[in-house]
Image 1 (tube, one colour):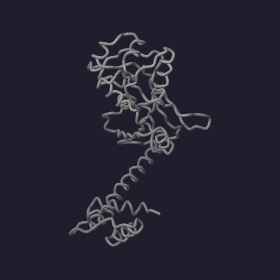
Image 2: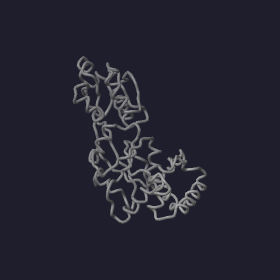
Image 3: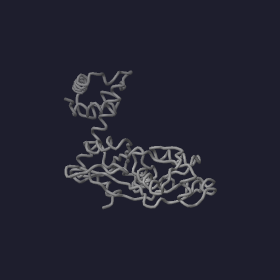
Image 4: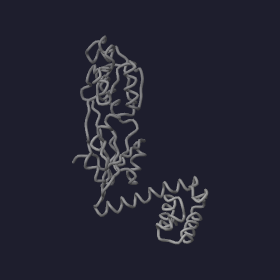
Amino acid sequence: MLNLHHLRLFRAVATDGTLIGAARRLNLSQSALSTQLKTLEAALGHALFERRGRGLILTEAGRIALDHAEAIFRTAEDLTATLRGTTHGRQALRVGALATLSRNFQMQFLRPLIGRPDVEVVLRSGSQSELLRGLEALALDVVLTNLAPARDAASPWLIHRLAEQPVSLIGTVVRVGREPTTLAQLLSTCPVILPTPDTAIRAAFDALTSRLGLSPRIAAEADDMAMLRLLAREDAGLAVIPSIVVKDELSAGLLVEAAQLEGINETFLAVTLARRFPNPLLRDVVKP
């Protein structure tokens, strides 16, 4: 078992750089402090310091141990503050986002927290299953996604609908300017850049073209919104994409909306857990 008292003594020595100085600050004898450090090293199976002149320098194992020690004590302080309702100083919000989710949407979600000196935002990306496991293990506070997780009476998820964005055909000024203007003509004559078949947008688009009796020429498929945006900028075709993904390009005139796909929308969700002590920062980004 790791002794947290020994870990705290180790951190003090690592911070001071000398056994004498740390012992004086801890009000311990040098020999007692040295003995407890040796006990910690024995428990971890590695030397944590090497002597350089009169000072002590962290070994590679010591640097790793110090990083973990800092995280452990920071977590302990957060725990105490959270349960006592006395959180002060910097708080962290741990956000998981689907790897293919629009970066513009993620920034829009985080905007209320960006630049606040009391907030640290920790971002992780991954697959839906990875992120939900992290949420269930309390390693994440919220997961951003456009895929609603399966939910039944036993499911732990709370699903918050954040926004719904229309999906459009987006292309360069040159391409849109020289193409016919009706949706049917666009889809009949212009190559398209599509999300992959396992996405809700693609399913809705395929249903739309089936109803219209059209078989568009597919120029490219991608499971990443950023790649769809880049392919549209390279004029590979008209991208089937929510306008929020390319809002900067639309504002700058690099891309234009050829047509809005009526009835096709992208829904952005925040998934959380019902917790007795939820992260208070969630109130600033997930509105009731």
